[in-house]
Image (cartoon, rainbow, N blue to C red; front, side, top):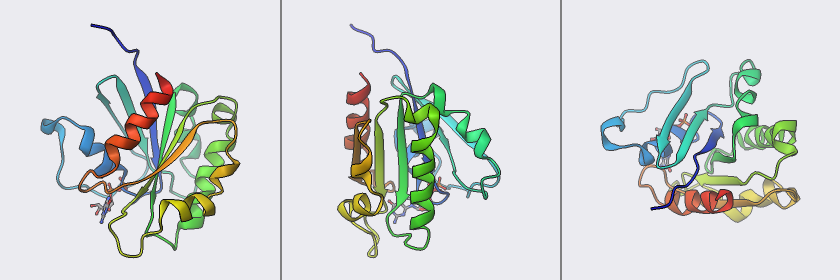
Length: 171
Ligand code: GDP
């Protein structure tokens, strides 16, 4: 057979956006957790799925941990940004965090693919991926491939499609 090289993918987003739930979908059954404990402080979750090494963290805590999470930017070959499509209260906060990620020199200077999961698509108040891409001004990302995908991390809907897009951009 042929071997694909290993890649590092960052999974970022605000707390409660659905990162842990999403990653559970890709974890082997024995690692799968049914109860997801809310993240306290700065936690980094890491695991390997096929040839992808996922590193996930919350972009929250009033920026207290910003230098800790930004440390992961230079070694990644792709980014998954998870947004809670139904969390209109923190929508601007999520946009600010995505913007700060995109202008970080370790990300801005490299043509790494950016996948946005418009998660919690099943919630009645959820905004559509089109509305989110307009609000996030995604069309302004000109130096990188990007893609936005509606997802439901609980059922797994949209997740494989999104991750396939991302890995296709890398390999
Ligand atoms: P994290 O803090 O980003 O890791 O978010 P979690 O994975 O802990 O999810 C936060 C909460 O949102 C949990 O109660 C999840 O069950 C719920 N959740 C995650 N994804 C979805 C989704 O797509 N739809 C719905 N309805 N709930 C979700």
